[in-house]
Length: 341
Image (cartoon, rainbow, N blue to C red; front, side, top):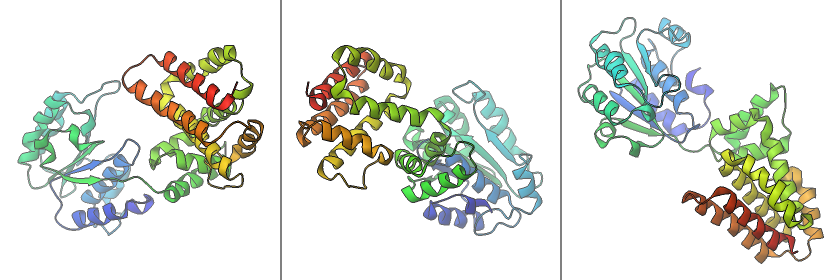
């Protein structure tokens, strides 16, 4: 029932229940990284605000307000977002769907709730919304969502009660994706689930997306192969087919580089303890150990330099250095430090 279906964020849930069970703020702002669950929490909060008899966990789920809300037909719930393929909400939509509409009384609930994706409000749109935020009718509540409150005008933020969603724990994410995996046609192994839970960086939406990304595991496997065969890879192949792999995956370069960094990190751990259970790529343990056993010249210093080359690459890409050139430099450094040719 309502918030019970959402994992984590215990403190946020307690604060929200005080709002809808008491006298709610006229405007709230849900903030947090993309995929953290802002939309889900904002909708459940909106449902509780409209519910005839809300309970501690949110909307009752039985009254007409909850039934209409769940069917996406509640007349007192207005969702405002950008049109498909548009970056920003049109100012005219703010005027028509919000400014003009707030003057109309609720139809079946005691309140009207406006759910607005504030990430899609440019400065003009925020200014248009501001007067309604400053002087809302008593039965009007605004529920805004934004990745980072600093992107909004200070005058908008000052009129909202912010609820910042925090990163989820590994166990919380593992619990969610394990349940999804049970009903999946392409079930992942336990090792893959562990990797996804770790790689999601506490963002539950990211973990769910990775579950359905059929190319994710293949990409990780290819990266492990590139690193663990670098001692047997010639320079010509390194700067042709291996380089092409990184070029083909340029759109996902942040994920790619993080995976490479984790592979190097696993090599560091296994270098010190071949039996360690703390590596990220558990399913690739044998391949990583075989590489270390074969490459006798590898030491912690060379692994540290290999890791530093990836960090340097990330900094270079942030200042718009040529991607192909930067990747080439990284691969040559990895070859020098790990290949010992």
